[in-house]
Image (cartoon, rainbow, N blue to C red):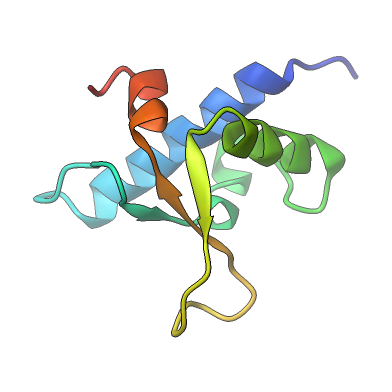
Length: 94
């Protein structure tokens, strides 16, 4: 099946924004906000166990939209990322 990595990446990023907005309705998505792509991947049609998901996530990191965050106290097995100014621009939110 043919797919475009940039479209998958933007879909994943939009899904993370929607998830954030739903769970934090009074806190706008801003630079440095923590996001967990794994928690929304299936909702946007990406299986976390596939190369397609990995490529979309890597694209967001490579483009500077997300920065991996190492922190204590996170959900075990779920990686956390911070959205950057570039990520907000990709969403059209800035």
